[in-house]
Length: 339
Ligand SMILES: [Zn+2]
Image 1 (cartoon, rainbow, N blue to C red):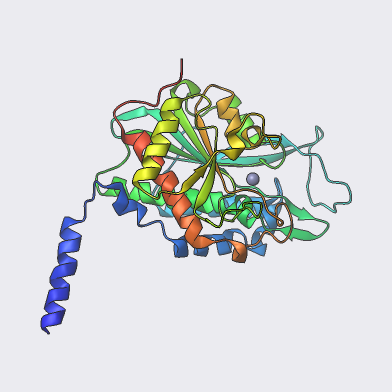
Image 2: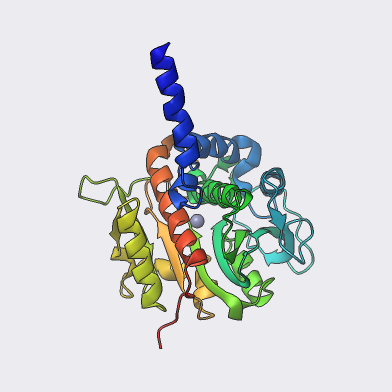
């Protein structure tokens, strides 16, 4: 009985003194198990590899919309209930038996999914967090589930949105607005982000930063060190040394991952800086960070499946992105561009 009373007091004090204005409190809601539960659904065969314009991609956008509704996170303005429709030109793969119905211009209708948590003090400044919702789809009758590419980024974004919404409910919502964008047609040449950058819902001149997540659930087999606690950061210092410093400082204070800038080298032949959706923001002089854990033997193959994801690692990387977004959204100064 004594033990029981002691325990109760202990837990009560935890509840009373947990700092609800502290990002740690919300970061702890981002859990490996939650990421896993979401990804086992999102990268399941039901979504048929989420090929742009295919039935599985339509199921994916419904799944995302349902998530934001359930969390009470608002649809972005000027969308049709979270959907920003656009037409993407799709080059059909040879030898693919496809169910795509292209219009006479060889285009197909698809949609970005856009949600927002409005800022409490500077609602007209925007931080965009993004991941692409599509994957390679059905090819030669085989489903390319895209668990890492980019199911990992997608579920990370959902968990981050949920954490920010929890903070908002407790009265600690972000001071700047956070826009969550799931881009479609990334695999067809960054089409969803290109469309957004040409038809922005929120002014690009007031968009301060884009943090883009594309493949953060695995370990790059090319790495020789035995430290799994790394992430590749690309772009952080290209337009804003301010952003780079914030990102470094926040990482040191929180997850303390090894931040590897190998692929940020402008001379790197992979040119990853130009290969995911953040590039359409960088082109418009908006500072970006691209979070990435590297390619692997299952990249763009039917074997990129949910059971190969390292969920504890995915949790740490997701939390780091959350903390970085929290800092950028809440600090007094906006992230500044280099002169
Ligand atoms: Zn990708």
